[in-house]
Length: 345
Image (tube, rainbow, N blue to C red; front, side, top):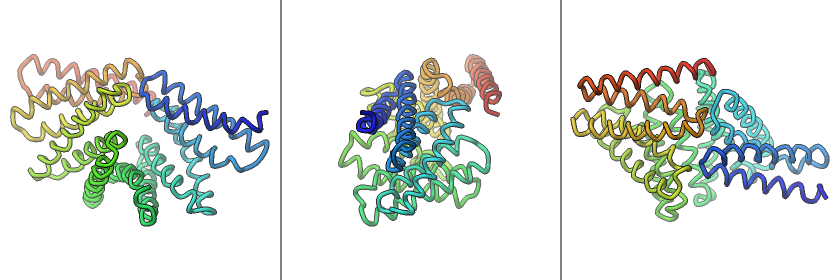
């Protein structure tokens, strides 16, 4: 009885794909792509054979598939992720025009995802579109918050992290200042959410603190830079706790927060902070070395960033041994980036 049970199968495939992607290991994430693609194929067949009633489910499957492909890394995966994400936004915009109350939250979520997929492209046009998508997502969630603040608080926080990141990619001072304001508001929201449900929202708080640390560092005053170190340290502490329970899922975030902390500590300019910065940079590079061994396509760009950071921290130490090690880190980062540039110029 395909007509009776195919919709349920597709929904189950989608749910299992999401659970697998949360595991963090390479095999689970690869399987999540296969399952999400199968779910999308089923919905396409249902729409062709029966009714347009399954169009919202197809949009959901395409959005999931885009996110899973993006996590896989690589030029082709990013290209497909962007294509599916655009289609999900296009479909959900049509749904929202007819039934805004029902579909505006989904549209905002899709816009937030599309912003992230666009930012990976790197060109100016994509970055401009990414900023516009992120801004629209925040505007929608703020409107939804006016009617149902409790339900959409976490979604608003997620979209504000994305919007803050997109603003920080702009060169003008006004955008950088707005990015800082978004990051500060986001941390406040996340603390409120963690107070009620720590297990659910600690990962989001860690991300928002890491984001705020980077935004604060853009200001040149000593107070902001001290606050940036405090935020980065708190992000590392949270991620260490999360890694203790689910290493595969949270190791990438720990590496990111350690890398950020290394940068923020180095800005303090004193010997003790520079020594701690070196330790953080080394740990981040070691973690990403392990991640690359499992999923090279996804984590090679991050590995190169960590090696570059580590090279700078080593050079700051002085001494012939540190300088030689710094040279080899720089050389490895260069080779990785040559390879990436050849694949995705």
